Every structure is written in structure tokens, then in C-alpha cells.
Image (spheres, helix red, strand yellow):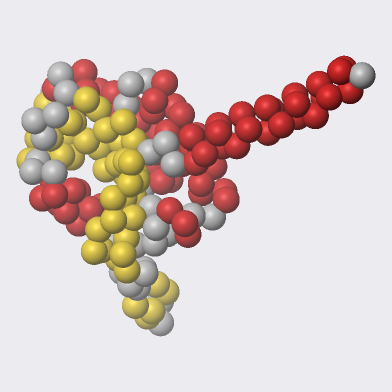
Length: 157
């Protein structure tokens, strides 16, 4: 008789573990929101991050320039489609500066709750690879929608 209760107990324990893991991985990255449009140039994001984290921009090192350098972090700022490049640069900057490497990914969505499933999965993959390589991931969210003007030749920022 006792054995028929084991599957229910196992199911409940498994469900509790699944929910706990799902919650833990849902937002493993740190996020910041800036008063910037989602279509803003990378340099706007870099400059605002430097201002808020009291950092210096475009610090030259052998083989490149660190986007933002603080007393604690060497930060590369990138849009999501260039995350591979950004992760490599973060590794290089951490090694060259002796500081914690950070990959700051600029999101297009206004806040984590507005991330589409595909984008969320991409960010989870990026965070997993950053973590495995000792790099901190930060997601930068805009507070304003994309601000593009339409012209007769197409879309222009």
C-alpha cells in the first residue's frame, strides 16, 4: 500500500524542483533601465552606463578599447545580434585589465516582462555562456520605444 504513494510524492518533489529551477534561471542576469530609445546608437548606451557606474569610456588596451572601465568592471556594450563578438571582447578586456569582465547586452524590449520567448531564450543562452566563462551579463532595457523616422528611401534613425 505504501508504494502507491511514492509516485505522487515523487511527482510533487519533481514539480517543486522544476519550479525552483525555472524561477532561478528566469532572470539570472542583472538588468538596468535607461531613459533611451530602443533604437539608440550603441554609444548612447555606453555613455549612459559609464555615467551611472562612474566609469571611463573607450579605454585603450593592447588589441582594443574597453567600452566602459570602472574600478571593478571592464564592460563591453553590444546589441544582441553581436553577442558572440561581445563575449570574446569581454574575455579579452577582463584579462587585460585585471577586472571583472561584463557583457552589457542592449535589449530592444521595454523591460524583461516584454521579452519575446525567442529573445528570452537567446539571453538565457548568452548568460549561461557568460557565466561558464566568468563573465557577468547585464541587460540594458530602454524606457522609450524605438524612435525612427520614415523617409521615402526607408527607415532612418
